[in-house]
Structure formats: C-alpha cells, structure tokens
Image (cartoon, rainbow, N blue to C red; front, side):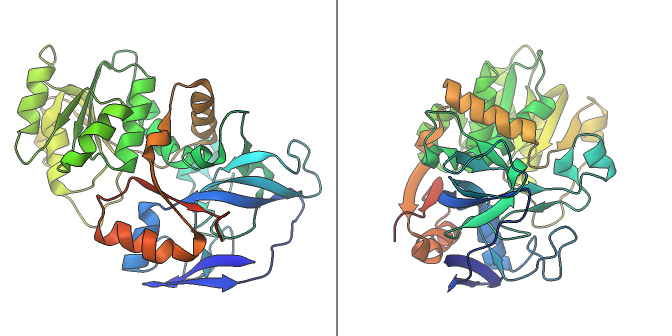
Length: 354
C-alpha cells in the first residue's frame, strides 16, 4: 500500500509498505480524507520535534512515521474482541494515545498524559491506504456527516476544548488572536456557546469574511488599530474581554491578549511556541488576570464536536479550501502552507484521488 512517511527535516517520502495487520482490540481503517496540520508543516521545516527519533514510550515507534492525524475513513477490518464497530462504519479518528495510568489519566485528562502520543506523530497515521487504531480511537459518525467534513473534527476539537476550559455562564466576550484554522475553530466553539461578543484579530484582511462565517462579530487588523483600545470600547461594561485566546504564539499576540482583558480575565494559550516569551507578572497581579494553557482535547470534546456538527450547531465546511491527492502532499500541501501560509485554511488530502 501507499504511505507518506516522515524521515527527517525536509524529508517526506511516498513509499510502498505492507498493509498493517489487525491485532485484538484494533480496527483497520481505510482513510478517506486527511487534513494537513500546521504541526505537519513545522515537523517538515524544522525537523523532528514531536515525532520520536528514538522509540516512543507507548508505541515503541520512531522515524520513519506515516504522517496524518486529522483523519476520517471507513472501517475495513475488525480485530478480535471488538463489538461496537463493524466493517463499513464511517469513523473519525481520535488520534490521542495515552497510558491510562499516570496521574493526569487517572484524573480523566488523557490529553495531559505523561507519555502522550498521537497517531500520525508517534505511530503511523492516516496518510496511507490503510491504518490500524485501537477500536476506542475510531469514533463512529452519525448519518449526515460526510467524510470530508469528518476530517475537520480533530482541529475543531482543539478549539472546543479550549473554550470548554475557560468559558462559563458569566462569559459574554472573547478575543481570538489569529484567524487561521485553529482560531476559526475557537470562534465556532464560542458561537456554539452563544458568546455575544466575539472579536477576531488578524493582519490578513482576507480572513475577515471567514472569521464572520465562523462567528466573529468584529474584526481587527492590529497593524491599523490598537487592540486593547478597541476591546475596551466594544466591551464598555467590563473595559475588556472576559477571555482572550492566543492561537499565534508570538510576543506581540501575547501582549495584545493580556492588555485586552478585563479585570479577572483569562488568557488562553493554544499555540505551540517556537521560543521563550516575556510576561510581566504585575500585569496579572494588579487585576487578578490569569494565564491558561490548553492541550489538544479529550474524548468527550471530540464526541461533542461530532454531535455539534450532526445537529447543525457547527457548520465547518467553509474551512475546506483545497483537496489534493496523496502524491502531492509535499508540493501542493506542506510547501504551499510553509511559503504562503495565508493562501489556504484547510487542505484536505483525498485518498480516493489516485
């Protein structure tokens, strides 16, 4: 079968490998659509960061690894002991792998597992003709969710989890810095929670229309408008937003988030930073502001997103801007996002295109 495998910095190869065998408790899936994530781009450009160069603690796998963790597909085979999934079922793949024994897992937070792994980063993922996963990682899709839309469940779950971690019944306003895919996923989750004031921030004016589709009520270009002044004017009762999401991971975006908060507001970091940042503790002390990190999502978040799509609360199809074959992942996917990052929202790899 075909598999797109990561070997190292700027070294991703389309290879022919054996079809994986199915062990007890596993299912084999024929991937239909796989989204290209910013993580895939970063691994390609910077070299192995999340992909293990030595045997991973849970999967015992190392380079080469088949990429792809935003996956939908059709069940092709079922291993011994699997009862709730059948051949032919349409599924979205929950890619998190956890040990289920560490403190975080015992507390119900496998997204914070000490040994966390992901299909597509720590073991073989979905950019192949077949993949095997634990049956519990194959989440069945209700009728009406198409397989291309199902490939968006994974990034949407990142935004959903971030919102679940900080939004309460008293939250009425939110700032989302960065209107890329994850920022747009956060906006859709905020819209689903009926947040009355959602403010998007991005220097790319082409993102204004899609931010509006995602749920934003206001759009700020920080190159021409002062973000804290704008938020204070819009949120007059509180003189700032209740929560600010940093999806960009830059010093300037962090500073915008902190300054835009109301008293006792929360900055939520979703970005994977490429280096250190500077924080002024007094900016948090004097108005009791908070800084919170969120890590991917839980199974409950993933399933909640599936239900939100099925019920029409979330309609994320506008995020799909390109569909490409497996053979073109590097040339028309990774390199395009690397050199022209504002050109696409979500590029899907269609495994049905030969």
